[in-house]
Length: 228
Image (cartoon, rainbow, N blue to C red):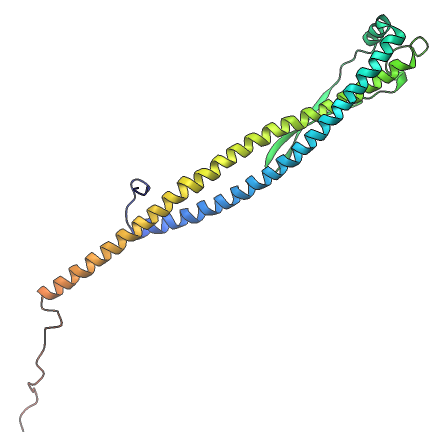
């Protein structure tokens, strides 16, 4: 299999130094992204556990609210429940924001004044049975858990997408970018070594042709001193 190198590479010393810097940078980026991926996976695991706990809590509250609603319907009647529900209708303001988790923005949801006191629900305490208060309280508590569940589910979705992006970048650096850089570095080094050998033999041949070789000798027997 032919090793892949960067196209248009010139086997020069300057190019070799450039490739070395790119390799160091790519390896550093790979290390940082690998650490980020591991941290995101740990955070994803924690959020999944949190999501599971909130989901179980919401299911328990749902069963509790349904049970209390059934008892209240049997005690007060469906018409009383319907009229009371119409009186208690109100708008809720969902406040959203963002928080930073390992460099990733994840959502935060909250609703102020979700759970109300009995005298704040709008119906007459004289003509409604106490069971209706229990039903209202149960469903308000359920809605609070559902908002938390929506927050963690959205967070899971965002973390999952970020993990997938980070994993693709890690794999690209590990399996393509860094190997190509190293192959290119090896190719340049081999070409430079080959050119150096060629220059050495070329110079050696030139020396031989010009009589600069080891076989050339100079006579030192002639005396340039005046005879006595």
